[in-house]
Each structure stands twice: as C-alpha cells, then as structure tokens.
Length: 173
Image (cartoon, rainbow, N blue to C red; front, side):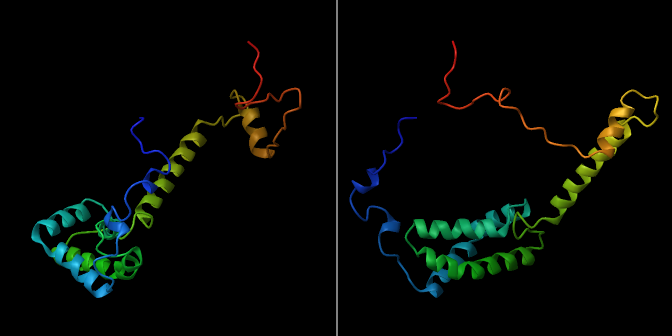
C-alpha cells in the first residue's frame, strides 16, 4: 500500500528516462503502419489476435491496445496513433474475414445485449403482474388499485425528520 510513488516523484528522475519522453522512432504514419502490420503479420501474434477476436474481444479494443503499446515503446506519438488507427482496424477486420470468424467491432454497439436486457425487463414485468391481486376479495387488491390509479407523490421530509449526515456531523456518544 505504501509502495506507490509520491506526488511529484516523476519530476525528480532524470529527464527522458522513459521511451515516451524521448522523440519517437518515426513521425511518418506510413512507417508506423508498416511497423504494426509487420508485427501483426507474425503467425504467432496473428493466431493469438484471431483467438481473442473469436472469443469476443472487439477489434476496436485490440487496435487501441496495439497503438498504446506503440506509444509506450516510443515507436510513434499519440497523434500518429489517431491517424493510423483506421488502417490497423481494417487490417484486423480483413484478417478475421479471411479466417472466417465472427468478430465484434465494439463493445457498446451490441444489439443482442440490448435485446437481452429488454427481454429480462419484460419477464420481470410479467412475473410482477401475475403476482398482483386480481379480485376485490384478494388481500392487497385495494392497495394495488390505489397505486395504479393515482400517481405517487414524493413526500418531502419535515425539518424534524431530517437528520444531518456527513463526516463533520456532531455525533452523540
């Protein structure tokens, strides 16, 4: 717990100590694309990447990971990453299509996930509706009727009911 760096400690180390603090190896986006394509074309790396895509890791996440690693190693800058991201993305899409696997573009644009959550909500609603009393003789029927027919009003607490909360509240012992 106490092994974390103290604030400002990075300012006391030697300048240009890390690769991202030095000038990048390349500033040309074409060279940066060539670097990443060569790395991704390695059969071992490509097998691992295809495996990750096949098991649901989105291509967008993979691209961001590769480009962040390139910046951390000092290969290129963040600006270059933004420029070459679509090219690396397209390379991975074509690799996935060549192998014939199903892949995801992004996590957030998953229509199956939204459909599943909608189905869950509908099942919960149906279950709650079946449990509601239907006949005037059933206990709780009048309560359900009042809740359904009248909109609920939010009752604000009176000053006597409000209790102070927080770190600086005086507490009685």
